[in-house]
Length: 284
Image: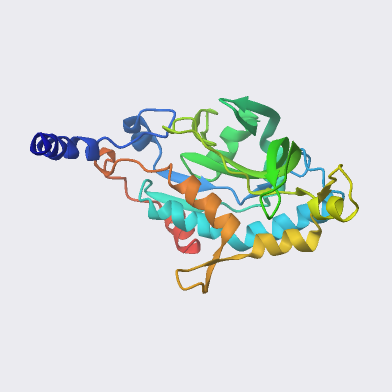
């Protein structure tokens, strides 16, 4: 019996390996045909979203600076998927691009995942795509959202379930017609999940215990605390700091892991224009 199971496993392994999961909203053949040159807008901060921190403007400025420091790590990871002929970082102020193209924001709760979804001005989007000589544009947006969560104390003996204010990172790939080709959070996963960038709040169990109070207060993290969390480096197996920042790296890996396109579906691309070559050199 064991031999039969092993034999069947070996027979079906090639079939399973050849069935790559499609995270796109279109068939992979269509994506591979129409999406060869992808333009990535520098990471956007939606400062008008549900960010409730008392130092909101200072927080937005911090996020803009952090995005500029690490967004090319995401660009490199997307390139490394080899899913597109060219991936380029687009010029321009992301705040101005966002203000110009964004039509509306909608708070969504889809399949139990709560996030902000964005819709774009189709006419201005089409002009933006044509102006940048790309097939589609990728938006990556950091925004705020308030949702319920259960937080445990450091000793795991206490917990508090209530609404907390989070920073989240979402992303979309749209073409000149406004077609949503791909999105994150991604609802084509076999097991749906969506990890926030950061919880801006925490329950102060220690203060409640020190004052013998049954009421635990929810507080906002300080700006210095938020900065340290955003700058915290990953550790390797020997507990040495790496060059990767933990929070951004986690988000970037999740996003890029859902952008694979089967290599055998991609047809040879046309020879790139001089403009495309210049953009590619600039992004290396």
